[in-house]
Length: 151
Figure 1 (cartoon, rainbow, N blue to C red):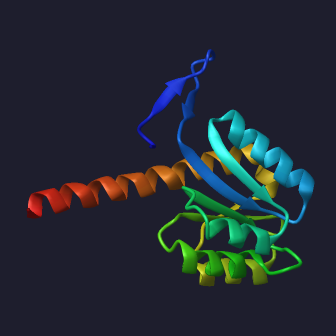
Figure 2: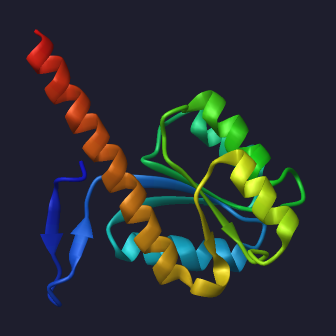
């Protein structure tokens, strides 16, 4: 759960019991991103194939789904649309190296999915991921509280 945190020796907070699926056609990006997330306490599942990632999503629901914008099998927005059919409420995030491309900007607005520039680095990706999961957790807690008040 998001509320379960502990401090590392450096005093930095680490998330526990959070999982993610990350798909990017670049194996090095997958390896590095999964390493960063694992070091932060996440259960990171990395894929270089959008189809393999979709198959994995049929088996379990992660706390977050991250996709590269441009991939050969299907685009990131297409992948996230397919992932939404499996896990509608799971937060999703797009990584892109093409944030200055007007067509990419339009596509991301249409998809209504937050994005992070690869140029900003993996630390920014991790920070954005933490934020998305925290927002989802907050919404869930408010829904539970509201349901309790209605009873």
